[in-house]
Length: 116
Image: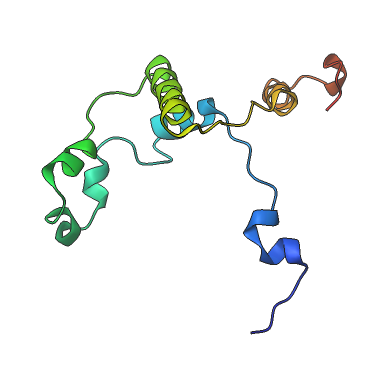
């Protein structure tokens, strides 16, 4: 098997990971860029018929997504993984988030004293 490019291009683990905030996930779900409500409709009928009722019900969401609810559920999951599996999550990348919001607000970089 012939490969081209350097090892970072071939190995996905070496690539820089995308930095997405919880607000991005919320925006994608509310703007329907990702499937949130009625995800069950996206599953082929052959597969749907074999799903246990509990899983099918989990994919049949009718409630509207709210930012506080999403934040609370993610916090609960983080706490669950921390207590049950001693798994820790990396801290937020504050310089990146500040830079991202500055770009969205069209603020000059000079406003941020850290100058990302």
